[in-house]
Length: 464
Ligand code: DLL
Image (cartoon, rainbow, N blue to C red; front, side, top):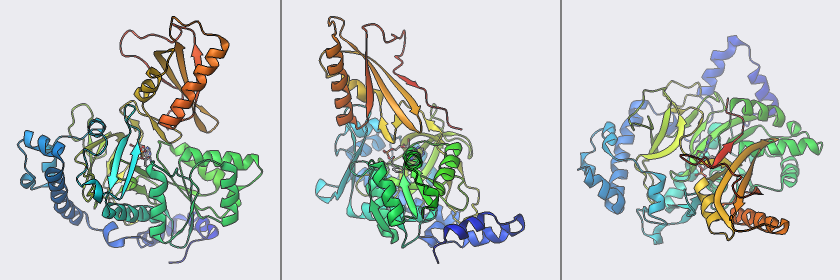
């Protein structure tokens, strides 16, 4: 199939109503990286899921003492798994379980069989570490290629990858996926925005991978420099790793002149490519059910909610070798829909993630827990254990200010304040990876709470 040009795509968008059916039929036959898997009838998906679930639960039971102990405590053996519904008898896995078994305690394979490690923020100073076998990496690359194709990328395209490379799964996840798709990758990572804009223009990327906030920041810098990215070859943006809204989608589309598509994932489950919107509908992310089992639960009771009702997304991996996850509570709030999609894909749609039900903040795509900042502060001399995190949106980007106090017995000079502020800033940047301004307040100035401490003032506009 030929690569659609900017002109032909916008012509397709303007098609009159009478031609919509024809258009949607064509969409159903549109390019798919893995057509057989992506359009499998739902009964077939369920059969495949049950088969793979049995293997995955057995992998967890046989090779991870933590899972075996908990299953046994419920009187459950892998052989008891007869129907998909039986999964509901198994306990949830939490982010703290990964922390408690830091670094490799939940791995189902010896370290010698682990091909790669990634890590994301944990709830304390220690990161959450995830591992992959060679097969896990191959599956991830294929699912990410499937996701990119679903978003509208095609073999032969130039993919400008501005997700951060390193321990974060975004950079390498998108990189391997784009290569697997047969695209040409520009491995930019984040930062050096002016340079990114020059290279997008000079190399002629058709696809941009970035967090949505960074995409907007690029638009802003380009506009300041008098570069009109709407005239570039960019046509598709694959944006995720943080919550964003429909209003933000419209703004990015207008300012970059591309189609903005939502992609979802989390390191504990794999990384980016767990689910992705299709370019045809842009209405919810197809969750790849041949590799993952999705549930939505009431976060208070742990019971399943009805299809279409909002709740917390829980994911079980079906093919992961190194780190099988049983009923992982993502803390992400969303809804599921099995309604047919115009693109012809049969996999469930995960509606836009509207928020989280824990205190994790996502600041410019970086996951931050208040408790992590606290661990940094308590390790620094002269700094009192009282703090407030103020998160604002400055222009298009998130901005974090950490308000701290000095110990009451210290009478701070102006110089001391500067030194303390710089020290906090430096430690937070090097340990957590997030850039913050630091304000040193007078002792007692940060409001004390009567009950649960209020550590965060999130002043960012609510999602539409
Ligand atoms: O953010 C993986 C990723 C990279 C996804 C690039 C998409 C693109 P973590 O750093 O482990 O992994 O953070 C996972 O980020 O539980 C959500 O709270 C949030 N998140 C990820 N994608 C979206 C999205 C990567 N499309 C956490 N919308 C998740 C809203 C998202 N939130």
